[in-house]
Structure formats: structure tokens, C-alpha cells
Image 1: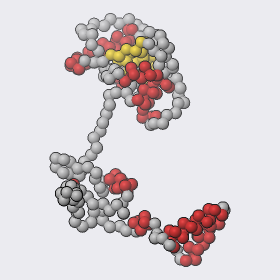
Image 2: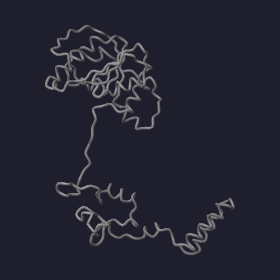
Image 3: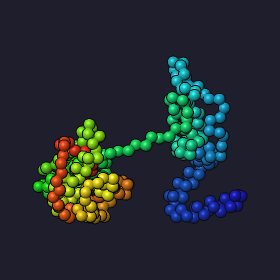
Image 4: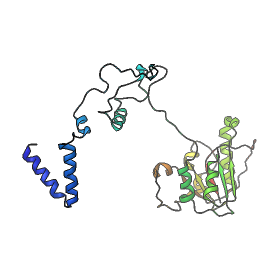
Length: 273
């Protein structure tokens, strides 16, 4: 851009500032920044492109004279040229690493994937505030797969239920998991009344996919829509609610079950009205 073009741009900016006070403030900023002061530092840094960690690594000693930074695991990144946002971007692209392996010192590391078998606080809020209708005091809420009692706490906070029951698995029974799962589903099939509502995570289709429970889902339940489908939430709504399903009991047929133990296995969240 030549001088004439720059002058035209400057005049255009001034003309767009219709308020006198805004024009004075802009001219004052030009004077302080470009006439009497130095150009903004970030403009200087953007025109410099040295390597990320040039030359020999510096050794940083403390006031006691001892070396407090391990040279093998310390990178010098110029803070004038690379702010925190730029460093984060370089880490995301793999040009820099924030971690190293304590066993072999490699910088080629990957984050660990964490999964949870418990229901999140966001899902609890969705189940009791949107998916289910308000539960009356005389309702009984049964949580199969209670773990640390998250659903029980949620029921206590969000509902008026006076009877909240949790069933948890004894870890010693893992070897008979298949038999117990089938037995529990048959027990529910036998004892849940017509019109009862079941909340499951994940869907019943996924829960029973590899189990021979002796009945077909369409003979027992039908999936129903949420009580409030238009709710909004300050979190990833689709991620937190996509696996949460609501069913209503359609038929109740007596099935005889032979249990050899009174212990039950973790399955899913079930609300029985």
C-alpha cells in the first residue's frame, strides 16, 4: 500500500466515526501508539519467524545456584513470539509436546481415554426434569445398577418419591453374570405393572442384544417420547441424552424364575411407578 492509499483508508475510517468523541479517542490512540510511542509489540512479533527453540538450551538456576530445569525435558519457547494460544495450537498440531514419558523420555505420547459406567449429573437432571413426568410421593423408584447411588441421590433431589431403592452387584458374582442378567430381566418382566415407566441407559435393545431372556421387547414395552422434548441445557445435550431411553410397560405375563442367589447384577436405571 502506498502513501495515497493509506491516506484514503485513514480518511475513510475517520468518516465512519460519526461521533466527535470517538474521533478524538481514535486520534489520541494513533498519537500515543504510532507517533510518540512504539508500534504494538504483537505486530513486531508477527513479522519474526525464528525456530521454536533455537540454539543451545538455557539452564535455569534457582537462587540456591542449583539447576531446577532438566535439560532433557525442557524446551525454550520465546514468550515474545509465541503466546499461550499459539503454544496450545502448536501442541494440537504436534509441533510441540506438553508431556513426556517418564520411562523412556519420549515426547510421542497420547492422552488416555476415560470411560464411565455411572450416570453423569447432566443425565440425572435430564432424566428427572425432562424425560420423566413429575413422580408422585407414592411412586417407588428402583435403580438397578446403583453403584455409588447416583440415581438415588438424583431421585432424592429431583422427585418427591418416598420409596427409593437401589440394587447393586456383589463383585464375586461376575462369573455367573449371564444367568443373573437373564433372571433379573425376567423378574422385571414378571413384576412390573402395565403402565409403569422404565428409564434405561442404554436402550433395551442394546442391553438385551446378547441375552436370551425368553420374550420379545415389543411384547413387553413400547418406547415413548420425553415428557418435555423442548428443554434447553447449557451442556452437550445430544451427547448426554442420546442413550437415555424411556419405555412404558404394555403387557404383564407371569414367568416363573428360579434364582439360586438373592444378589443381583448391575444393569441400568429403572423407574417403576
